[in-house]
Image (tube, rainbow, N blue to C red; front, side, top):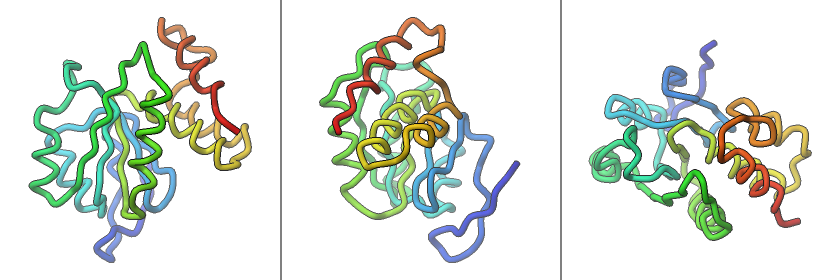
Amino acid sequence: MQRRCWGWFDRTVTDPEDIRAWQRLSPAVTTSGRIEDKDIGRLAELGVARVINLAMDDHPEALADEGVKLAERGISYTHIPVPFDAPEEAHYRAFVTAFEGSAAPVHVHCIANWRVSAFFYRYHRERGMDEAQARTLMERQWSPTTHSHPAARTWAAFIAERKA
């Protein structure tokens, strides 16, 4: 199902839900899995002013020269490479700093939206969101507590480390 949203340029645009694991968290925050060259223009049309990428550059599905390509469209770029099998508190804190660094519309992505959804789970919980609501948002992408991926237990422990 496609939703309509108000783009930054004061016109309605359609969320590009064909981007892998697309999710809108608020009018100014979207997330997804990996993006492709064709998605950069669509993000710009939505009014995205900045992108935070949590994927590793050496992943086979990572977009080469992503920061350069986004800059060509006037979109700022922050890369916080988070190894999928070894997320650390420093990665999460860097994400929080980047995310809170500007009120401009932001798109946060990785490869499958698993890193991103886990980071937002912690972020939402630390800011008082009800656990069930935060978990529901994360589980639209995956559940580290029930998934069979070998790194799922690492992520389950990581989201449990949230600071009050």
